[in-house]
Image 1: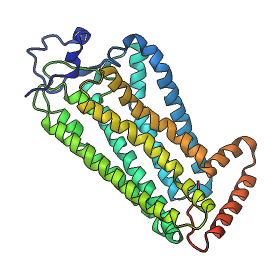
Image 2: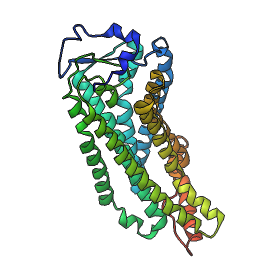
Image 3: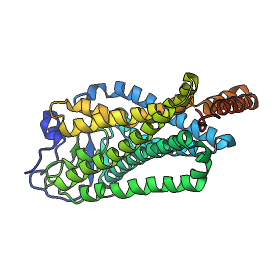
Image 4: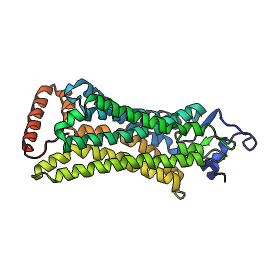
Length: 359
């Protein structure tokens, strides 16, 4: 049974309908039309202000973290290598959507080439999967640093980190590849209007007039399998971490141990909660207003790239102190103090367990 596209539910969208749309059958339309946020067209300029601010913060924050980690050799370790992977992923993920979104809001530039649409679709889902995989790798790093600290530098040496990063990239690239391939095979014989600000997978395939169950089922299974497996792996890692932390002898040491994981947990929640909510509303939220769904779909792509540099910049002492030293030129004293505090922390835990690099 054919599915009714979202755009046909909204009367004013018919103004964009293609000529001869009832009789023309084509596999690859030359262009799609992105409507922005249906129902909120009058507010596009105002909505663009927070979107642009979030994107600016994301770019400046993530580029700053990359600069600091590259410049400070004391940060050349597994935790910061994974953080750099996360930063690059965030930059690509936000840049793949927001410039086009702002062009719709500011210049009413709604057209997007069919191949460009499929490329954008691929980048969005590919780098979302990469980010999820990087969070698993970071959870592994925290697990080894806290539960087996004496072998942390050995178990997560640079070649091992590189192999983990390569595995994360290849997994996401290969699993997402069927998305644009299948989308390009469906006949789009009704309309080429996408009621969205970017080419989201489900929004695109729902425009097809053929049987799209393969795309729908594959997308759903990948979402649950990949994200579900990643969340499960993170949960297992942190279960072991919490058991190790609660076995420590003093409250002060426990708090210091919690501090090593706080930024990572905040970043995980900022990524998974909006994404889960957006995914569920797009598939099962028939009574959810379309403009709310589109807004949430934009938020889950913009919020983590904006928050991650703030979270890691504020909660990670090495990055915070290095950023401070760039403006005050007191870097050596700052890091001399940090080295002493780290030694003191290790001495406190000598009778039990030694922590990895604290934030």
